[in-house]
Length: 392
Image 1 (cartoon, rainbow, N blue to C red):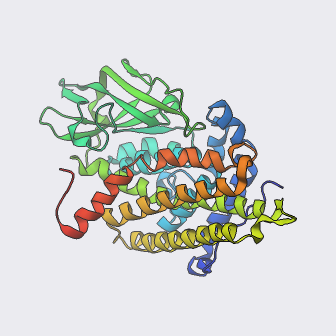
Image 2: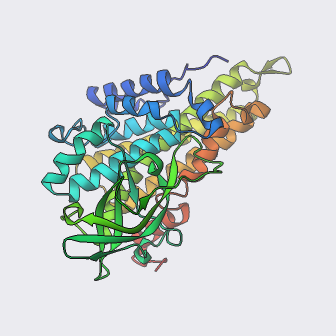
């Protein structure tokens, strides 16, 4: 089966709902992924290494902070364009999308939305180009779904802050130049600070032994009496709502990204089923295989419409956190189910690196948990429709 012959899935002519700019951005990202990511990603996944050479290209295609205004180095695109970029990157690999998603939504967004003008000028242009890379420190070893219970803390020492604590499961940590870290101040208020690599007492040990997101760099953030200048505080928003606002942006990108992984699995399964012969005919001619394929394209189409509508609401400033949670939960679960069905269509070949199926499946097992677990997002919807929180 020939590689890099991917064709997008558009069963409901959704392209007609996109602007020319949105399609141009999507197509540019699609071409870049086919040329730069697809040919090498299996090898990097097998080696459990992050392909750092791709960072420059990600910056060049506008994958870092595409919705950040041009005056700060971004492309000034709308949120549907951002989603389409994430879709194409995750078609390549969830780890590549994670890198861009963290940089865009969890590093650049809080600096843009909550930072001072000086911080925006200092960091955003370099982050947009990929000259500087960042990570986001919220999750702790003992506090994932309940970030308000974090123990990482900052203390006011007069001319500086003293930061202590640890964060875990941090994408980009091993090579990040800066970290946007959330910690409690002496009043118990959650505050964002920018920590720079090289600050004494700040280390980023890498996480090894992963069976998922193997081509993504994951690590810890350890703070041992780190002196942080007061000008590194994000001054324009604090409290738990600040990091949760960042997660809304990231979860929105994940909802789009998961479609890309599903599309890649479906595309591979369709091609394989048309070429694989059993009982003297292609397996695509059998009813059970057609059932799998028909359900795949149906679920992908539903997810595309969900994201297009969500993106339209986000462009209008109307998308709610609960709506974003629904899309993230639905689309990642959809992609994981499609990956599992696609593996069945590929038979034994589906477990090999010759096809992308098992890699996507393993990656999605992480995506369905991070940035809000599958169950927590369900309870967010439940809370929204009943008014009764079930997880407090």
